[in-house]
Each structure stands twice: as C-alpha cells, then as structure tokens.
Image 1 (cartoon, rainbow over the protein chains, first blue to last red):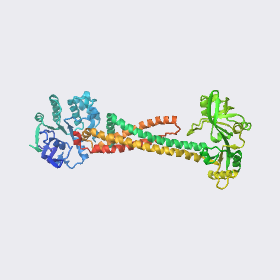
Image 2 (tube, rainbow over the protein chains, first blue to last red):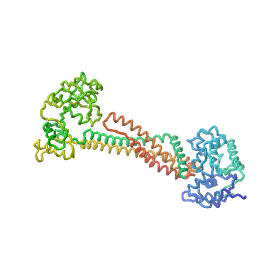
Image 3 (spheres, rainbow over the protein chains, first blue to last red):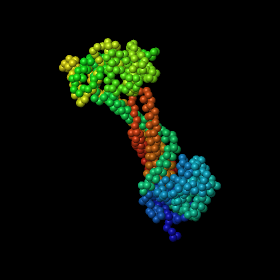
Image 4 (cartoon, each protein chain N blue to C red):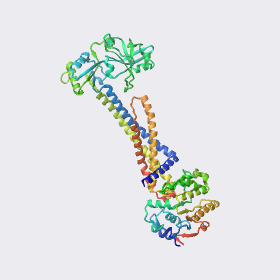
Amino acid sequence: MLENPLIKLINIRKSFIIGNKEIEVLKGINLEIYPNDSIAIIGQSGSGKTTLMNIIGCMDRATSGTYLFKGRDITTFSDDELSSVRNESIGFVFQQFHLIPYITSLDNVILPTIYSKKNITDIKNKAIKLLTELGMGDKIYNKPTQLSGGQQQRVAIARALINDPEIILADEPTGALDTKTSEEIMDILIDLNKKGKTLIIITHEPDIAKRCKKTIRISDGHIV
Amino acid sequence: MDILYSIYQLKLLKQAFKAILSYPLRSFFCLLGIALGIVSITLIIASIEGANKKANQLFSDFGPDAILIFSGSEHTRTARIRMNTLTLDDMKAIKELVIGCYETIPMVPVRNMTVVYGNKKWRTLGIGSTTEYFTSWGWKISEGSSFSEEDIKEHNNVAVIGQEIVKNIFNGNPQSAIGKTILLNNKPFYVAGVLKERGISFGSMVLDDRIIMPITTVMKKMLNERKYIGAIRARFIGDLTSRINDVNTLLRERHNLKGEMPNDFTIRTAEDAKQFLLVLQGTLVLFLGITGSISLVVGGFVMANLFMISVEERKSEIGIRRAFGAKKHHIIIQFLLECIIISLFGCVLGLILTYISSEIILAYTTIPISFSYKIFWITALVATIVGLISGLYPARKAAELNPVEALIA
C-alpha cells in the first residue's frame, strides 16, 4: 500500500493499577489502519478491546508505546490537543447511544460543532440534512427518550458525522439493538465506509465482523 | 482567535440555558436561595439610602443655620419632665445681644390637645407661635391662609391644621375644612388654613399631625401663661458653634446659673438630630448586614451543593461532551455560566421580592426605604460573584472527570 497509515500503533501497552496489583490489559499492540479501511476489532469481553478503542479514540493514553495519528506522534499531546483530535477527526458511535437526554435530536447532532473551531456555515441545515438522510427527518425535535433504540443510534451516527471526521469509531454499535435494526445500522455504517470514511468497529459478534474488509482478533491483550 | 472564542462562549451560553431549563427543580432552589440573599442585601442598601435621604431632608428642614432651645435640662428632658424655664424676654435678649442672630421664633406646645368637630374626635400636638413659624420651618399652606399679625395682636382663635387632622376629622378633604369651627381643648377655633403634607415621621411622631395657632391665643386663652414658653428657634449668620456658645453663656447668665450648676435649657442643632437618626440606622444596618450576608452565603452554599449533585448526575453528559471534543475549559465555562445565569435570575427575583416587601414595610412602618439604579448594579455584581464562587468547585470537578469513566457512569 502506497498510502501512509491514518493510524499507526507501535508496541502499545496499557496497564491499570487495581489495589496493589498492576494489571496489563494491552501487551504490545502493533496496528496500522489506512484511509478508507473498514476494520472489525473482535474479541471476548475482558480481552482488552474496549481499552484499545479508548486509546485509538484518544479518550485514554497508553502506558507505553507510540501512537502516530496521521503521521503525528500524539502520545505527547496535551489534554486539549487530544480533545481537538477527537473533535475534528473521530466520530464516536456507542453501544448505549450516549445521547444527552434533555436536548432534542437536532441539538444532539449539533453538539460536536460547539467545540469546533471550524466555521461551518449553516450548521442547523447540515444537521437536518444528515438526520433526513438517516431517515430521522420527522424526529428532529424529539428528545432521545421519545425515540426507539434504532432511532437513537441513527441520531448518534448523524452526530458522529457532523464535523466531517475521517474516522467512524463504533463500539458495539448494534449491541443494544434487535437483529433487524442491527442490520439497518450496519448497512448505514458500511455505506459510510463506501463513501470514504474509515470505519473501525469494536464487536464480539462474528456476523458484524464479517461485513468489514479486515478483522483483527484480540485476545488477552495481544493481536492474534 | 478571540472572535472564535467568543463564538464558543455564545454557543456555551445556549448550552447553559438548555441545562438550566432541563433541571427546573435544581435551578429553582438555587434561584430562590440567591433571591433571598439579594432581598436582604437590597433592603440594607435601600434603608441606608433612605436614612441618608431622610437625614439630609431633616437637616435642610431644620435649617443648617438654626438651633432649637428647649426649656428644661438635658436630664429632665430625657426623664420626660416638662419644665418651663425659657421666657419671651430670653428670646428678645438672644435676638438683640447675640451677634449674627437674624431670626427668633417662640413656640409653646399644647400636648395631647383634643380636637372635636361634629362627632369626630382626635388628639394632636398644638403649637402656639408667630407668623414666621411657617416660613422658617418651611411649612407651606396648601389651602386657605395662615393667621396674620393682627390675629396675634388680638389673640384671635384661628388655627392652621396639618394633613393628619384633615384625614381624621375632615375625611381627607382639605377644602371642606376651611372656614369651619373646631373645638380645641373645648375652645372654638376658626380653621384658616391647611398645611401642605410633609409625609415624614420620626418614630411615633408624625410631622403632619399638628395644629398651629397664634402664640398669644395659646398662652392667654389655653394655658393661662404670661411668661414662659416651651422652645425658641433661632437662626444665625456665621460660625454656628461660636453662636451656640454665645447663646449658652447669655442664657446661663440670665437664669443665674453659676459655676458647676447644670443648664436648665437644652440646645439642639440639625446635626444632633441627624446623628440621632444615623445612630438608629446604624444598628439596623448592622443587623440587616449580618442577616443579609448569612442568607447570601447560605444561598451560595445551596447552589454549590446542588451543583455538586448535578455534576454527579450529569457525569455521562460530561463524558459525551468530552468524547466529542469538549476541552476542560469548555466544561468549566458551561457550569460556571449555569451558576451565573441562575444567580442573575435570582437577583432579578430578589429585586422583585424586595420591591414588594419594601412596599409593605413603607405601608406599615416608618423605616425609610429608598431605591436607586445603584442597587441594581450592586446586586447584579454581588450575584455574579456569588454564582462564580459557588460554581467554581463543581465546575472544576466536572472538568477533571476522566472522560472514559464519566462516559461509563
């Protein structure tokens, strides 16, 4: 591949101190993710996949190792700089949707733009357009509690897209949904990948993983 | 950069407003806490301003160049013993012998004077004096006229009545009083005029509750008194302190007071009256100041506590915001804005409550209260500071949350 990797992890280790014991969750992860990849990171619970996702998503720092993001070493980035990376480049989709309960779908979608320095003109129309494309055009002023799980996840996907990030980082995006809705959500995510987004899905379901171009299996802190 | 930053802040302001409206109970209790504190603070400021205004009015009403000499010593006056020691001759002597004295007015009080008209009855303060009484004390005649020099010469039964008498005897209609005959201590008097309302009172004494009559009529027909008068008002040009000394020396000499013997008269100036009023206000200010500060501090604590709980409740929201790129300072600013906005609304509610309570206070007590725009700015500033201080700790705590842990919560 001629392109430079979007994400490059070199010997990433992460350990937590629980009580007096130091428990190593990631034991030297090496990983390269290229633009427009679609990657499933699969593993049992406790395998360290969520920790890996947090590190890839710049939500958490590795204990040691190097993380190159678009060629830049972000291991040394400050908290504010990491926030900017998340804001500009990463769109999260969570298992529990994580919408703010007291604001409307529209306001939830707009949320990432509050913290953006990009001067996106007509944010509201952009948000409405995204929601409409995802079939939520008639629910823009509903609050999350008035929506079904599938609908909430669509709002969450619209939110992940509003700042035009390169990467969609989905943590068990279908984990709280029934089979049919899961299919629909996966269709949307795969479609986004076809349109150029780099897709990283953390899952424990082989069926979901099958739909991605690559599958990385993680077990006991190692990639196998 | 700065412009972009302010754009943030506007966005964050919107977020803060939404959060405030979404947690109405929390917001309401915070608001109420602050409002009660503001009520106390504004009442203090308003009563200080009111007292100053009243003191200044008193000062100008009394006349900065005037003194009042009462019969009886300081001691007997405080013991409420009425002694007549001043005479009309004393007054003449002051006018003629004290340098700079340009006006002297005698006053003879008739305390608890009964007023009867038809089936209406009232008790008031009667004062016998000269025609200069009205101009010197700044009393204006709103209806009819004052009595004349001729009335004084001929001991005529003429009276000028205060608004309190009009209210209680003539159903508040001053025109109907003119020309009527009323009984003052069972003697018929012709009502020649009505005094313009002053609306001031000192403690239980209402200034408008008085009737002025020619001094000759009062002394001869009511009190059967030829020599002694109750008080003298005197006005001077030049340094008042040295004039007071002159008056003191002159009266001691005239009353044959030698050596260590105490004065049998009392001299009062506008300054004395002002001091008296300010001392009274001082205790009130101290009391209100303490309660005001305490209630504001309590209000601040309520807010800080409720926000601590709120941060706990909204952990997941904070995690979400952080995941989508909120920096620590965004979180801090949002929570601080929530606190400040609530404080400012609390301030507005407080001012409304103060206005209502001041109306009640003004209606039922004699505590002077006066508002100015200054109060608005002071309380807004105080509320902002309280909001800022109360919000600081919870906001910092929210910002320092680990985003991963917050999200899971």
